[in-house]
Image 1 (cartoon, rainbow, N blue to C red):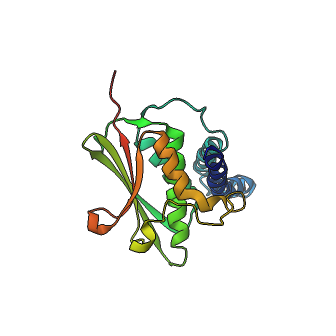
Image 2: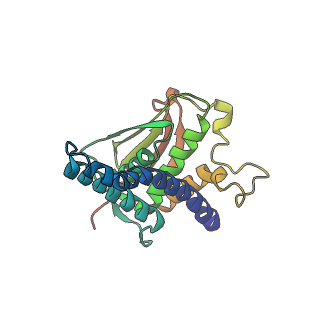
Image 3: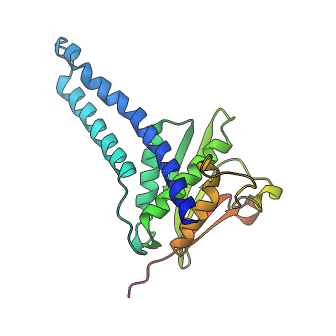
Length: 224
């Protein structure tokens, strides 16, 4: 499973890197047009330059985080907001066909886990959901987070439901699938595994259960 996690992580963050590289074209092109702006006395040269440089800096920071993930650490206290914000920033940079809506309870405390694992799992869930709904003209994915008793709960949901007969097989590797050829095809079982490594769980809940979508639950951090 460790090899599957590594293969899938490379594929998932490879997609994210392409998203950011696409986003980098816009500010870079703005800077190359600066000579034309200089020739226009009515142009807000300083404002345009600041905006382009700010956008470029944000995109480069995202790309750096994708290509150079943090050093692995033991399970410890993590902010639930940070991995959600990171995945949302990546998705916005990619300007994908999906629209992301994020709602995080302001009072949610620190959870127990490894931030890079939670980032991996959430990005994999967003990619899987986007791909599953690729035939739709508009796709809205909602990520919400709140405290649920002694756990932090993150729900990744869309308007579509997984059919009941498919739910039992969601987190299984399809028979005959070669993960080295189709690394994104193991996104769901790998996402479940990395959340398990954090001491948490990943399940699917239907509307009949009061929730709709993929549900990540992580134990709250308990101070020693």
